[in-house]
Amino acid sequence: MVLAKLFVNGVAITDSEVTYYTAPLKTRGYIKNAIFVNDNDTPVSITINIVPSEGSATYANRIIEDKILTGKSSWSCSSLVDQVLEPGGEIVMIASITNKIGCLISGFEIT
Image (cartoon, rainbow, N blue to C red; front, side, top):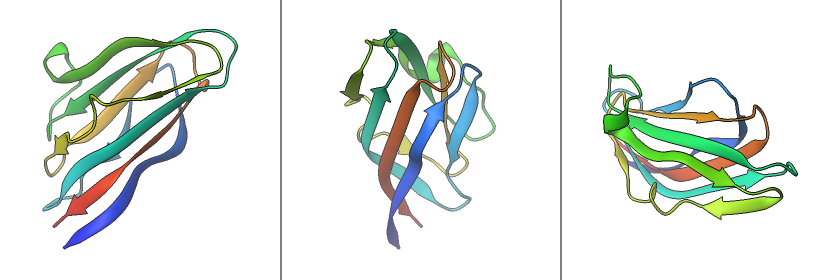
């Protein structure tokens, strides 16, 4: 079964490494869109990992490292589009300043 899914729905990214989505067991997640907005006047950087089941965020699974969003800007992240999260896989993110970057990531879950 294919189900449209908001993996991350308008959540502000914190300055601690946090898992924002985990693919359920027996389910794959397919990312189709990822948008980030900096509503702050100051530039803020973000780092994004696609972490395999039971893994941890490392350089080996980093998709974006220290991407700087200038003040009052948005960014559509094409590097996340078509990424696959295997069952138990996670989207892990961190920002340089807490609660200044809003995030929406959508796609499909397939069981």
